[in-house]
Length: 534
Image 1 (spheres, helix red, strand yellow):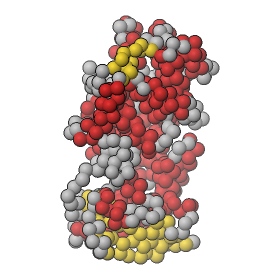
Image 2: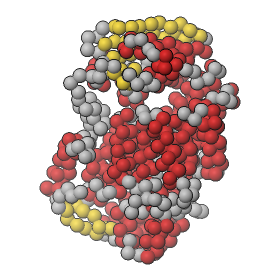
Image 3: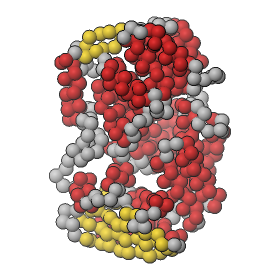
Image 4: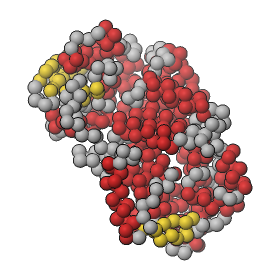
């Protein structure tokens, strides 16, 4: 995609463009063009309702059976009850989503309205729904007190409401009773096949269910390994209390998958070796499927734990993620990982884009979906588009390693000031080597090869043993820019595994100077997943 004429410059051995005045204007205009294009469907940095893109499409009238369940207010004001407030709300959303006759907003979509002071009817109008469920929860000792009311958004009329005073151990019964009351008020008499999923219980053990809710709360908001470890421990407690708890086993598998991915990419994440994490995760996901083959999270965990485990698994991974999406088409996470598999395993950037867009449509604040859209644009060299998506990702999660992605996009557009700002900030993120290599490229652009080389050497010196995958890749980019092609290829060959994700990494513009080299060509082809598009 051409955005305008550029003043071509060579930085080390990498050719980049510095936009002229008209190009800058066109880059700015691109945000407007993409927001209305039927093939790109991006918006500017913020939607009219204050949310990140993609923006909700305006409709003249909401679907007649559409509903949003707002997060319950924590009436006890005790942060120790936050997991229960979130868990009960999200469980009601999940139960109501089982009914085909209802259109239910995803939990992530309504999450931004959870803070106090939000007018429910205003939120309902913004969300474009016909009905809204709001209420509050208070835990008093061993008892749970919940009050809810169903409102018609257009008029503010209260159509249904109830107050529940139950033992805390009966939280699943409260979820089921509220869901049935809401569904009946919106769509009328329920069919037997509709009542059954609303009343279903995941476990008969109240303590096991409590640990599941605690684990989900931690897993959904973790930012450090200690929080992820605590989530994993909650899931383990749940399955110890109820060995037949399929959903808890599936979530345990996902927690191990998350740990494994983080350890492989960053190194030193946990004390367990990667093989142990994979084995434990597979065992948990396998047990979940033995108990209930319809649990989408278990298929998702199996796919994530299979990634990078050998050259013959791409087709299996795609099938596992497709199954997860089929079982739960409203799972933004399933769409995200299916998109990643299509992108990495198949090299089908267009199909991957569709899944990523579906993921962020379901969860507008999904950081990894927004970042994936940015990365997909970056590898296809649509750098201005990449910046827009990455801007949105940073609104959701400021200070993350995505700063490196945006710094790269700015650098390749020729915006050195923005690239430097992001790269310097990335030095303090969980991927400092990424910031270091962009700064090295900037030093080389100014002609300071000594400073640039020193930065690359700092990356190489970060480990006395084998560099982590992320640090090794950053160092390879720097070596290419320094013109040290043989050493760059040697380093790329040493990085393991040479899997689908690695193959995609080799597609980035950084490695264009290496493409005529026979050794690089061999590495590129050897790492290509079987069945991937040429």
